[in-house]
Every structure is written in C-alpha cells, then in structure tokens.
Length: 90
Image (cartoon, rainbow, N blue to C red; front, side):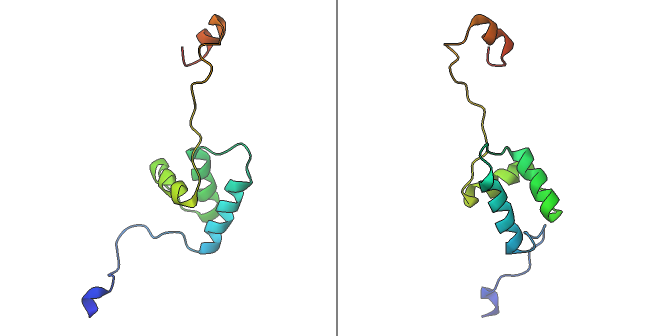
C-alpha cells in the first residue's frame, strides 16, 4: 500500500498559498490592456518573492485562463511607405 502514495519531490515548491494565486489572478483580470510575460513575472515576484522564468509564466497563465499579449502584424498593406519604413515589420 505504501507504494501508492506520492514521495517528496525535489525542485522549487509551488506558490505558498492559494490566496496569493487568487490575488494575482484578480490583478491580472482587472487590467484592460493585457499583460506580457515579463510584467506577469515581475508581478509574481513582487507578490510572492518567487522568480519564475518567462517560459514558466506562459505555462502558469494558460491553466489560469489568460493569454500573453502577442504583437500582431495588422494592416501592413494599408500602411504608407513611411509607416512601413519606420516599423519593425517592413
């Protein structure tokens, strides 16, 4: 029977408390402009003291129901030559 129980695992433990997760989710959902992964990483570090890698932040956001902001190439054909020259999408 003892073989059916989980053994302690190495590695960093998850968030300390469910309340911290709830507060972070509330702050993320309160924003109208969205978040990028670096902003979420800084927010989590400020609130919990835990620093995660950007890739792990994406893994956290997905089950929480959030998506990170992604720059989109829009209206590239309608931009003027000067606007295309000044943008990074030229």
